[in-house]
Image (cartoon, rainbow, N blue to C red; front, side, top):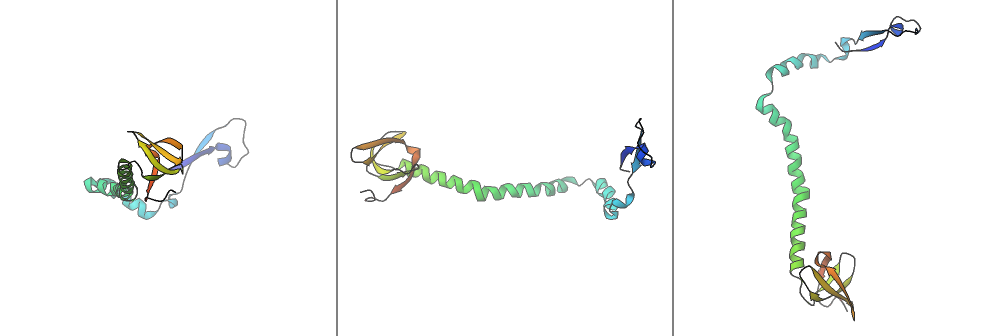
Length: 140
């Protein structure tokens, strides 16, 4: 039976003394649901087996499947499209960077590209900083 420990002086209804002695007081059995009390030994005896452990893991597996289709798969698709867009950039393309610069590609290298943002003004940016390739004629 479950219980708690309280000072003996309180258990006897007396005021607290200078020495502290403890008494164990049991909880009444009324707090335990009768249905829970009847089914607990039966569930422990069967052990659940393989099917019980699979049923317990099912919500966790379903959560990972849902997360894959809602979050991971769309993100991988966007990364693949962005990588293809960056690889297809050519000289003369008009682009927008992730920082908001708008310009025309004047030179290309392996990891960087030079962007002409005004006549005679050229900046060097990383290829991964390209956010969008614009249609021809957008930049005046």
